[in-house]
Length: 469
Image 1 (tube, rainbow, N blue to C red):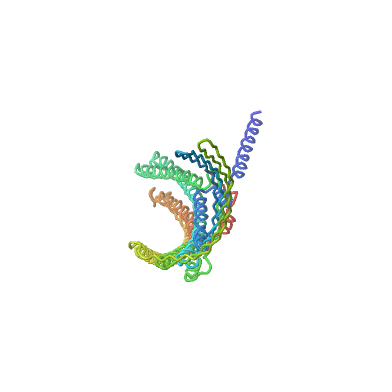
Image 2 (image 1 turned 60 degrees about the horizontal axis):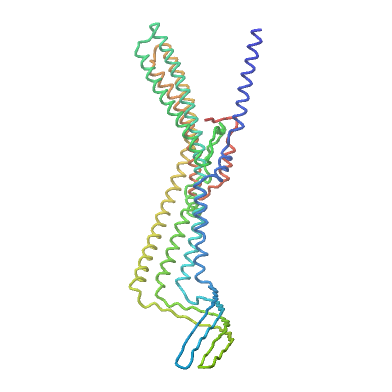
């Protein structure tokens, strides 16, 4: 009976564990799902999208100044007029009611207006700049999502090794106490093991906090709480980027980097603004065409009283008129208190500033492309080296433990060897994540980062490797 009860209890526990694992896997999310959710919910990207739509209207706003302007107006008037007069022989009373309708339409077309033309060119530059800026914001969004996702995986792996290190040192502490109790080691070794355990416990506590914080950072992107993610597969390959030559990536950056395009378009916009300001002293020629019509209707009634007589009268009146006109208007600015000259100088200095900013941006892009490419190559080599260091650290730990058993090594040597093993594991995990972020940054600076890179990374994630909160 007892055996049956224990069997049923064991089956119940196994079923509970199985269902828990199934539930966790079902709720776990991949990089692809996080990215697509953040695409809809991220406030920073939504703000950038709204700014892009607003700034892209600069072309249409500036173009309006060189296109025809048509305006129409109308009015309705209802008026009454009373008049009374008298003298020694008569009294006159007059009353009139008048209604009038007036309609007018005008067309204005600039014929020669260089400032308006250069401002239109400037508006076109600004609209193109807004497009490039939004593309840059989208790439930054991809990088933020990827960074936040793999920060969780990094924190989880660090926490995992910290906990394993804490347990390993705890076992070593227990063994050291047992050896001390039977007189095999001095009390100093117990103190050394205790100090190492306390340090490991603190590190484990910090790593758990860092893991929770990393999960919370995802909530900034999606506005939702996330409980579990897919882990990075052990078969992930950190390969050197193609092409291998640094100059090729520099050329990619000079041709495709969106921040560089923004700086160039900003320079062009500033140059056109300077040309517009310089042209403000030129004459402006405008064609104005108009048509108007007026309809007027009314009646007038009056009476005139003489001594012994009463004369009355009534009269209706009305009129219609229409007309059209075409005129050329020439405006020549002669003196504006020095404002036009000051505006021209200010616009010129802004153009110089935009030019220097483009030069600075170009130099920074070249340097960033070179350094990012070097970082990717270094990180790819580091992944292989860190993986080998785990094997070396494991071998060193086994040799140190064997020496400790025969008395040629002390507890400090064993603890250092254990810490080296777990440090090597953390370094390997960090090296893989560093390579991923470095590769994404290289593609960003070269203007080649796209959602396809997110989906390619997602292919290396494994649902069986659950990263839980």
